[in-house]
Image: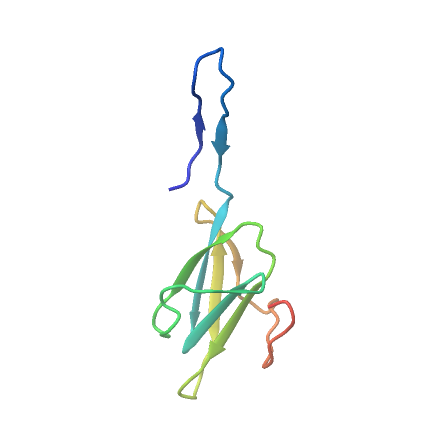
Length: 112
């Protein structure tokens, strides 16, 4: 679990360390694709439940500092296919949704 804590120890005459920790802000990335989804965040392949079936939403946590989201969709059976994705903040507010501003290619691009 992630939280904020402080540890103090010893008496006033002893020099003791103090530890503080706070989790970075995480967003939720939700992806659906017909058929198989592969997700990349800042060039690193990520795993998430739901990436192996077109009827399931793949959801994973990403750092708010992520700068590139890449999604590979593999249509195993032919016919219509597509990708839908969105990023929500820690309060579940929609920040990014797939639309015509996303770049689409039949080839992997550098940095994906």
